[in-house]
Length: 232
Image (tube, rainbow, N blue to C red):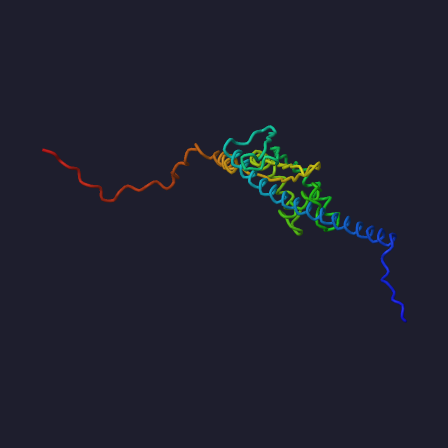
């Protein structure tokens, strides 16, 4: 007579080990899901902040062109409650642009000629000034371009400084306990200021009397003058 064997169950140790492996896996999965949700939310907030910054830049440009450029720096700040985004804050700095002297540009060109022809760093003012001079004169006529810049730049420099303003806009918002922010920089130009300066420079000839007619070539009299009318 055969003996039947009953199925063997899991021991307590095996059950605890399985639960431990399952718990570790669930914790890792929840962490990955939380990071994905946070990254997706941050991307959404960043997209909203970019659109708000672009809209605010248009508003600042319109306000500056309406009120005119100031010689001193201006600070503006506020929120986007009117755009149904009160959690986003903004601040803007409007600064006057100060251009380098003509001698500094020439020195930057000489320094740039000694360096390798690599793309300049955006934060390297000397290299950027050297590139500006190269655009004017080119490689074969660099000396001529530098002399032209030194000659006309003192006249152009105050016009550009009065007509250009640098606007630095910062948009901030909160994600939990962390503060996120983006910064946008734009340069606005007042065309009216350039026109006024240009007309003022060209208006020096206004008011000059016209040169008299050359006396050596007087206007000849008419050959057949009309007969006088006799009234009775």
